[in-house]
Image (tube, rainbow, N blue to C red; front, side, top):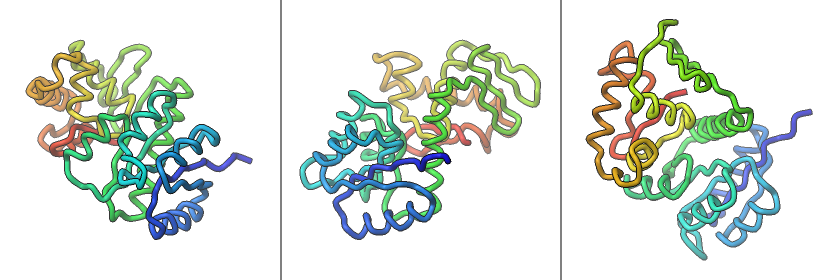
Length: 228
């Protein structure tokens, strides 16, 4: 029998914990709960969860600090759930190492979908899977082949590097700063014009209608996400 995925919830609001406890149990997850940042760090180390749901406003510290400390020793997916809905807050959390961000209030269906995406990505990384397929798009990371409708698409080195980074984090939003740092280097994190130009070129090569992209989605003011 396949063990249930273990979710660590770090959340000090009692009603939210109760809501998530019922919702996640109904969908087949095992939940462990922490009310403070310190307790959350301890449980993360002792229980090795499959995913962490993290509130930013904790009584003994900020969730951003928890994210940074977790990223010092684990690659576990971190999904931030917070009432802070400003773009700047999302960018800070993602830059600190969070994998995704969901603003309160949110629906159970969307939360469960985000959890499934994060778990799939983690499983793919663990399995070393190198082929990504989405509709007519096929990316073979091992062979560096990109196909659309079974026809090879020729990408420049920068275009390929950008696409490969999005594929490796498929379904998750990557901030402008993250993409610029990984593709162009740490000295180019403010030069978003590079990103806009190359995303436009990728869309023209990969999308059926570049003005209405189906694969390479924009997260306004934050970054980009490859749909899954």
